[in-house]
Image (cartoon, rainbow over all chains, first blue to last red; front, side, top):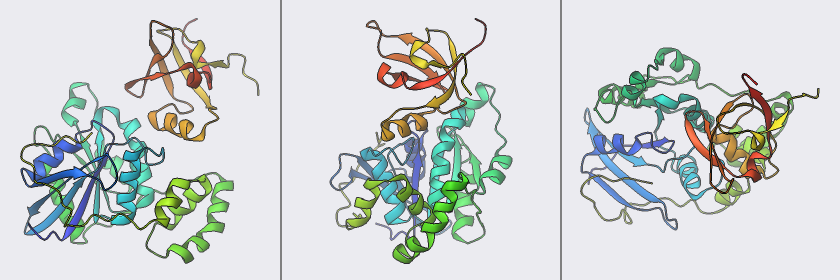
Length: 244
Length: 84
């Protein structure tokens, strides 16, 4: 097993091709099992690019991180507690509007994000053209068009990952502004939140969750974070893995 | 401002188009879920087929079909779009 230097999380709505991308990147070097205590499939694998080893985790497909299903909790907790070096959000080029919801939610939690616009071939067939440069400027993070199925854009994605870990990219993610009332409450909460959680968690995001009355987050924060250790890296698996 | 044509999504008939103005589901988690799925104010919905017993109904929103029960669509308000 390679001692991976960096961790990459794969996120995205269901059926956007996360697992296809995961399989393309890892080939047969992957393991599957369940998340501790949850009936949610967990798949992780390794790959090497330009001499750097990466561990990549295929998170369950979700539309959101707030609706409190087991899948969404797993995805949220991974971002929060495992703090991957890079989060790749895979979005469906044919349904960008719906997919960008999750992108914005992830951007509130971390700035180390690459947006991979998958199924770009499908979009072309439907006559959808996407201005990735403009989207990247608006979101403040790199945007890479790709077709995982046809192995298009993979190299571009890996180059972006490489640039990220070498500190060549300086993402400035868009901060979603809320109403004056909410922003005032955030401003009040922010110093208190920072005092308690320090730099371990995204303070503005935690403040927002508190205002939201998100009890599931509070209980997750109270518990020992369920870190995945290598010992329980489950049985090896040959062939492709489809996480549901 | 009271809109004359403010109606529930559940009143729409198959094939009709609808623009959402308000998602007023009392259950906050369910409301959040519907917003995540694309039932957002300003969003457009096309009514798809109704199941044989009249409930649930399929709705075409943001490029995907989603079925809602009357319990949910009763709380989605807005207006009918297009020719009457």
